[in-house]
Length: 120
Image (cartoon, rainbow, N blue to C red; front, side, top):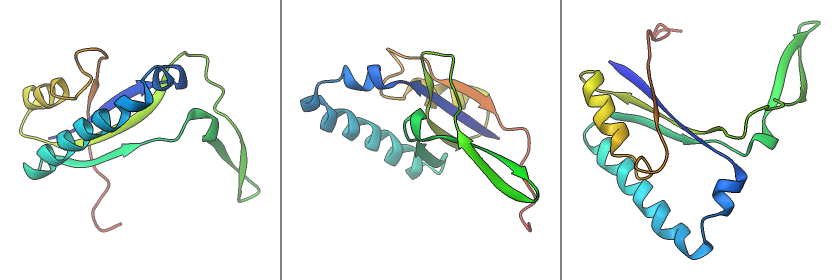
């Protein structure tokens, strides 16, 4: 089964981490990624740009119409996501709990209901 892990954050949170601590924090995350890529359970790990770089896209007259946004009304926004393929929900919870900051911040676990057809 596939599961998506969602991590939330904001610029204030990132700025609160001392610059000298960043290399160690990144190394912990890299170790987590390698560990679960090695088991075949981590299909992908993706860090997102700051929310200020996100855009809204609509179709207008058959072409993309791009505007600023989203305008978030929340303190935290989606910062990264991970796609897992593991044997069951309990295993997804175990992997989420192994995330380096899971003792400080929660990790959302979402079951992925279906994939697009492989021959698209």
